[in-house]
Image (cartoon, rainbow, N blue to C red; front, top):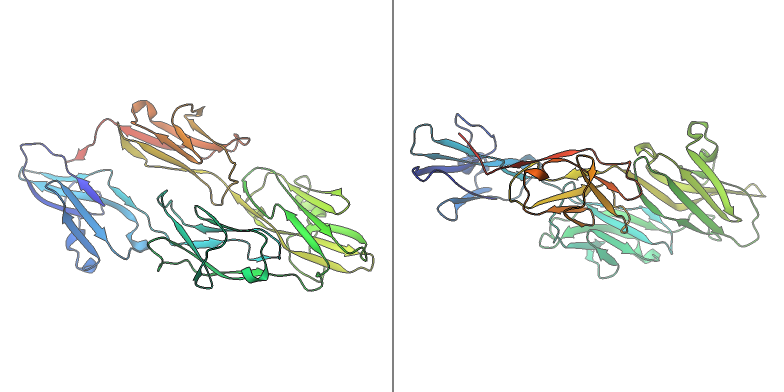
Length: 380
């Protein structure tokens, strides 16, 4: 991280260092000479008024806002520059259905707790070997029509940092014992839904004709024997869950006003005329998210600002995002997927920003205030 200093021409610069506390008086700790950080923190003056700090092997403890602190030859000439430079630290996690069946399409996501740069390139591994198959889109790996050869431990990494792989996540590909004569398609097999929206899942079974289905219902419990709970007749979900037999062998479940509590894998459960019962894996996974606006909270006039509409799971690729300032829909700015770019902002761009998804405008994100300052200020 670097800072470029601006101060009156009649001042002479004496000392410059980096610190974490944004104090305006007293003596804040000097990170550049901290013995506890020796060998891990390096401070360099690139030019007369440009100063840089480099942190190696960053950890969660390094998450903070970093400030340049400098002194001049004038009385009381001690200054801390705001707003500082914010450092966030993340590891990588693979997120996917952990059990699927042959023929399914599988999407694996390489997730981080903060937004990595747009130009980040992701790399995928199975059983420690780099993958050359599958479709990689940003931080996602799509495997189409998987076979048992696709089973294994999956990891992701960022190009240039291959040694910092995510923990392995095992993907199981197979069939449930006793269901070898069944082919069941879940559609969709994965849904990322907005909190408060309505979701419909369906399963279609094809069977040999030897079996005659008498009962089909949806459940959350992946058991192959016993009696798992029937979501279609659960009195606690009455009015919010509806199950329908659309065709002879297609069964759907619709959940309205979904919440975090609805995040789960949903399974179809069958019973035939001989009273045999099956729960069919891999099920359909429902993830639930709200929207959050992420941006710099304070900028100066003339800056370009990037606002990101973030979700905790990956919404469909065709999702259209809408932006609001002070509850009014925006017609200015450049919208790219889930991002809003404001170029050369002025005071008129200050305000509360929210985002929403087209078709679900009532499910807006909480407002985030963007402050636009007239000029870069130094606190004395």
